[in-house]
Length: 284
Image 1 (cartoon, rainbow, N blue to C red):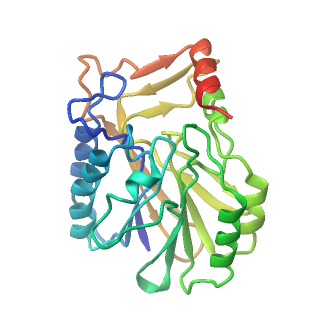
Image 2: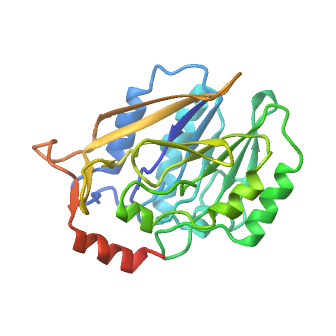
């Protein structure tokens, strides 16, 4: 199985809006897809959340106007995960006609060859961190109690990994021990996530976790100190599942939506004081 992993497009309903007053998210997404135009043998396209920046119906219609034909050309189903900037109730009204979902976006998608993708909604309305409540964990336990022939791919916006920076650690997923207890011994082959905007790998309950680089920008996790910065880059990953451990390939490209004359300048650089204000507003 080959999976194309996209994440964090942060689309707006207003096409003139710019992310951090600089990045055109629609152009950034088109730029990444143009780079991936020659991909073949993809069995699943996953977008792991923050599809929208403003949670509007128009932004979700735009997302599907772009991604539906792209996935169809690959002959692959598309799974979209809800992130902290998304509004699950709005998204549930905007997906393909005849496919109306409940407000909760937890669901199972059958895949070719007997596999399946399980999508979990870790968003918390009005917050930046992630959470899975007891009913979601119970639902996941029930789903995983019956293994899929070719295994399960779990997609969740907030990675079940401790973040690399102070800001990301304050906006991460809580309840990792509880989730690990559900995943222990299951048929989950890999967990795919977004949110951190930079590539990252790890594991939960012995299961590999992959975080794909963001499309609207890529966070620099090695800038050091208490600052936080993102660069005018866009990225994507391909995951291959077969015998043995998953094979993961990631790439980052110049951001096709960057309006700045100097692409070397960070999209943003938050001071420690700015990081603290963000955590006070959106953190746990």
